[in-house]
Image 1 (cartoon, rainbow, N blue to C red):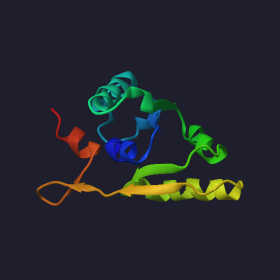
Image 2 (image 1 turned 45 degrees about the vertical axis):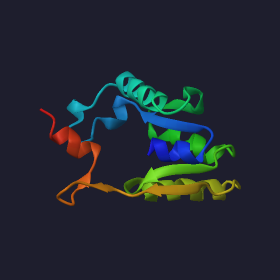
Image 3 (image 1 turned 60 degrees about the vertical axis):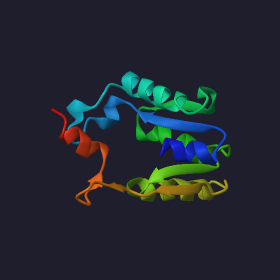
Length: 128
């Protein structure tokens, strides 16, 4: 998803959720801490482009997402199929506030060899 976003945008803001928002996720105990996840993003991005192209923003609660409905600077949002509906709501909220709708780029789900959805939840489930 990050490679796609950086292939179509000069700058990308990455909303990274804190542990508080992730505590209800399946296998939450196997999630890395916020700083470790941020460091992983930095390491990954630096392997193929300049770090000054990204800005990691802490998402502590769902109200933090309001920044994307209030600021005209945002032009697009790269989302998974699973988060598309929330992104559409965000875009509609922008229009209701008189801002341009946001361009939504939907990345399809990845399937494993058994044609099952591959996700971070599936990966965490299989961790020992």
